Image (cartoon, rainbow, N blue to C red; front, side, top):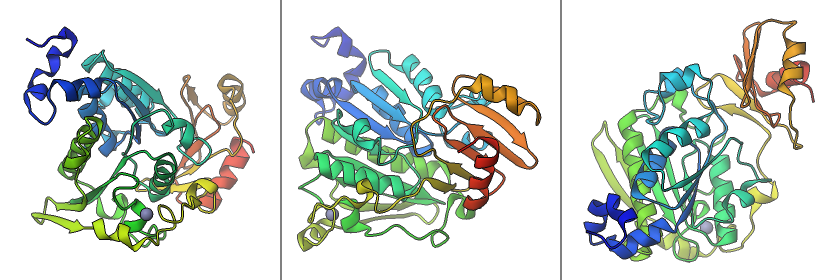
Length: 346
Ligand SMILES: [Zn+2]
C-alpha cells in the first residue's frame, strides 16, 4: 500500500530505488513539452504518460498516413481514415491510458516565433522531430531559458541520443556544429527506418527524462549514445570535454542564431515524402467552409475542423487552419510556393 491511492498505479516504478515515492511525486508535478509526435514522439509520449508526468504538451504539425503505422505506435488505421492530426490522435489514445495526466495537443509547426511560448512553462523539452532546423531551435530556446532537453535521431537501423543540461553538459551545437546541407545526409526516403531502432532510441530518451524529472541529474548519460540494431553496434562517444572548449556560439557566446532567424526557412521539403510544407508567415485563421466552396470548382474537397484536403492534377494539398499547407507530389520548394499562391492564396 502506498500512502496516496492515486500513486498506486505506479507501484512497480516506485519500487525501483532510483524513483521511489519521492521521485514519483516529483514526476507527478513535472511538466514536459514534446516536439514531434511521429516515430520517436509516440514512444516518448507513451512512456511519459504511463510513468505519470503531470503535464505533457504534444506538438506536431502533421497528419497520419498509412506508412506511419509501421513504427508510430500510438496510431491505427481508423486514425488515418479519420484524417486526424497526429497530436490530436495521440492525445485521445493517451487520455485512455492515464486520465491523471493533463495532455495538451498542439497542431502547429514549431518555429522561432512560437517556440519560447511552447516551452517556457515546462521543466523539460523532448526532441521527437526529424529535422535539424527544429532541433537547433530547441537548443537555442533551452539554453536561453536554462531548461534541459534530450535529443534523439534515427535513420535506417541506427540512431543516437544526447542529453543536454545547460551549464552542465555540452549543447547540441557543441557536438554537431551545423546541420547537414540538403541532399548531403541520408534521409528516411533514401535509407528507410526500422521500428526497433526508433523504439530503442526513444526509450533511452524517456529514461533520461525520468532521471531529469525525478531530480537525478547525477545519473544522466553524459556521452553520445550510438546504436545500430542491424550491425549489432552499441557505442558511447565521450563528449563532455567539448564543453570545456568554451567556443560554442550558442552556450559559450550565448548567441541564439536560430531563434533570432539568422537561419531557417518558411518552406521545407519533407523528409521521405515527396512533399513540401509551406508556412504562412503571418498568423491567419482560414475559413474552411468558404475555401471549400471555391475549391469545389476544381473537384472534391474534404474538410474537418483540423484540416482541408483537395487534389489538383498530381498534387495533393492538405491545408491547416493557420494557413500552413503540405503539398504532396513535389519536392521542389519553388514549385510548391507557386502552387500555394495559386490555389490557397498569399
Ligand atoms: Zn554549446
